[in-house]
Amino acid sequence: LRATPGARIVNTSSIAHKRGKIHFDDINAERGYNAMLRYAQSKLANLYFTYELQRRLAAADDATLSVAAHPGIASTELMRYTPKPLALLAPVFFPLFNSAAQGAWPTLAAATGEQVRSGDYYGPGKRRETAGPAVLVKSTRRSRDPDVARRLWDLSIEMTGVDPGL
Image (cartoon, rainbow, N blue to C red; front, side, top):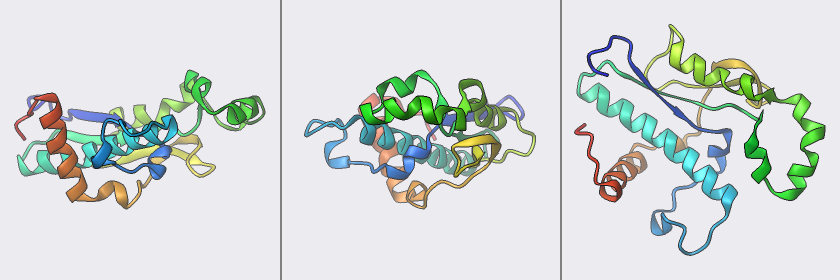
């Protein structure tokens, strides 16, 4: 990547990151598992990774961009795994949200946009980031905590045995 001008790494997050919290004391959900809360945690972790990678690339004087995007609410197979009451309402509300193809717009904007900067976060620009064309959006203050990001980075290296050397 370093040899490619304009190279970028795009991580996929979700508006669900707003409900996320990193449970360092139970990182593998051994004391209980709630699919929606763990999904939110994973999408928050993706943002921590994006911002920590951005900091490390900048410190290494590497021009590779680290950015993130979320699809909003898109009509995809993920809805099959939502709680039953929400799944029953999906046919009524899906016309208000993005199609699966439209849900890809923010990721495409992050991957190809000419004005993209390292640390940017893209999502749909309408209906509280649930639908519409891709725009630059803001993640939560929690997602930008450098101490938690660093701790999660170090834990990832420990758990995977992979150190990117940044």
